[in-house]
Image (tube, rainbow, N blue to C red):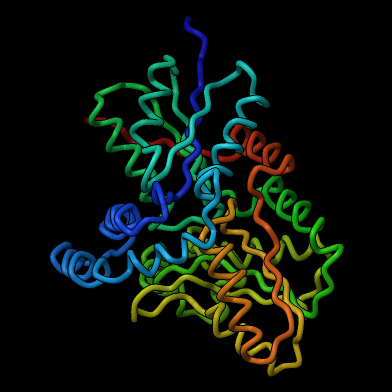
Amino acid sequence: MNKEKIGYLLINLGTPDSPHPEDVRTYLDEFLMDPEVIDIPYPIRWILVKLLILKDRPHQSSAQYKTIWTEDGSPLYFYTKALTEEVKKQLHAKAEVEMAMRYGSPSIAKGVESLLRKHVTKIVVCPLYPQYSLAATKSSVIAVQNVMKRLRRQVPVESIKAFYGEEAYIEAVAQVSQRYLENEPYDMAVFSFHGVPERQVKKTDKSGNYCLQAKDCSLSIVEANTDCYRAQCFYTARKVAQKLGIPENRYRVAFQSRLGRTPWIKPYSDELYQELPKQGIRKVVVLCPSFVADCLETLEEVSVRGEEEFQKHGGEKLTLIPSLNAEPEWVKAVVKILETAPREKVSVSQ
């Protein structure tokens, strides 16, 4: 009997190859044309993305990316690469580990093909999105399915389920955050998660009449909302706050990065930054647990535009708490998640 050889594929969302407008355009085109990201009929999505969004957005986003770009490239890329290398070291010869980006480089196809060349007998996909969403988690799993079907390889595939409540993840967020919070006095902590459209949350409602309809629907996890992104975010924030000893009246949960005019899950982070100074809040720290690596949404949207918005409305200081990146606590947590977190089988039949 052949000994099992597992290949782990760590998937992050992605980044342009450079901050130049053409590379940003290529990245945004791939990202926004995904039917799981903008979940509207193809003809309407094509018009919206190709003729409207891609007309001006690449230049706007390019300017933003240039503010965070480093000699090593995109922070999201090099942190994910560093994390992958450290996880490899921790696992030694027990398994193969590759990284991939859902959009951009290195592609999921490249990651899968690399694992198959190493003769793995099983692929375990780990979407590095703690909370489940159609636009990130489901889209990444579908991409893996499509690659496997194209390659016609009969290697079993499993996907690690959303680890928003896994003790290893919660502990890592708390430990890494605590190092910065110790020396950063604050009046209020804000847990800012990436937003998603309300319609996408409702699609994950098993009952069809609970998410965003029942009172306080996101404050607990029940059968109807086990895959609800918003509920999972609130759960993560609550558990991390408890670990850090932050009382309920000293933290808020909000959602950032909305796009377009369709309703996204609330409350909105940018509106919260405007309201807090009116409540006498002068110093705010922002934790972003849905981003396991610092990226445009943390380093520019929160740390630059968020602070500007907060100060503009009377706040004194808004401080971004760094993401998990490739910190030792996170490396240890990822290894634990890979080995023990619940998984589900991914169908790759032809």
